[in-house]
Image (cartoon, rainbow, N blue to C red; front, side, top):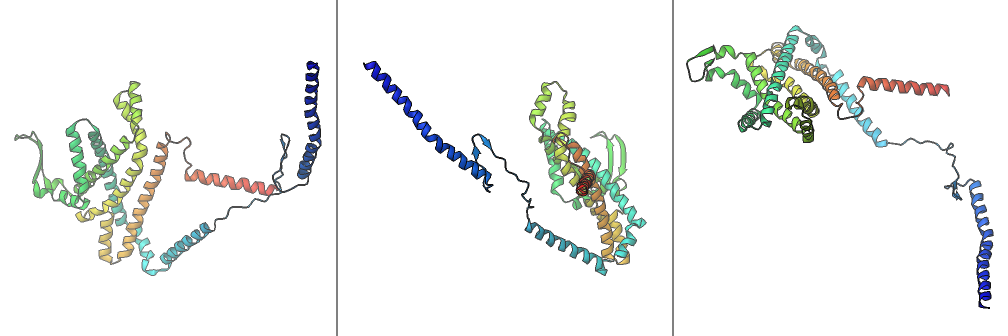
Length: 361
């Protein structure tokens, strides 16, 4: 009797969920119908899910609105107005005397002074960086004497003005009447010459510019070498690569990325630094311009001639700097940056494609 009662109770319990589910089925069906009706009515909200499916929204009627940058246009307008005002002043003020500038810009005396400036820059720059490289290696060596000599050299020549150095070298004959080469502490002499004969205006200029440039170049090169990760040297040494090959093929190519920007700044500064040679009465560009305007009293136009030539030289050096830095950036970036010519070609190609698509419509 107890087993029969238990069976009846189980059947009653199992029937109740079925009835409950059957009772909720119409309500669920009504809610699904309501959701489907809301989707089909095209409401502006995000379409709800129907089961596990999502109804796609048609965005073809949406209008694309460009981002507005009003302050950018205001800044552009202000800068453009300032540039126009400067250009208008340069073009309309007769006191600039552009006719005189054009007359002397390609004069033979000015061109000769320009060539002397370029010669001083080339000789002093090459010798300065070679000596600076040697001093940088001395500073990085394990010898206390080499480190001390390199540090003292850089300390002295970076602590004194270039103008003072020029005058000291030009008046070296007052300190030492003769310069000789032989065996120290003996009377044996292989070479001997009067200091005033050896240290001419050109020699004093090259000597002053070279030694001053070497002091700065040594620190630039040393900083570039130290910027290379020490793990590069350890990996190369573990592979058994010789020390000289490690330095020339692994360290220096990576150090050049850090050396080049500052080194080119130094060369550009050296171009302008040659103007200090005028104190030695050496006929470089600035001294030549001074001689001319002292004779003609056309000071400002002649100064503009020198200024424009300095701008031309530094602009050419900046172009070389860009391409050399781009060459040495191969190990740091996956894709080299586009050159200005490549950017122009890409821009023209993009506009051509856009115009073709517009005409096809």
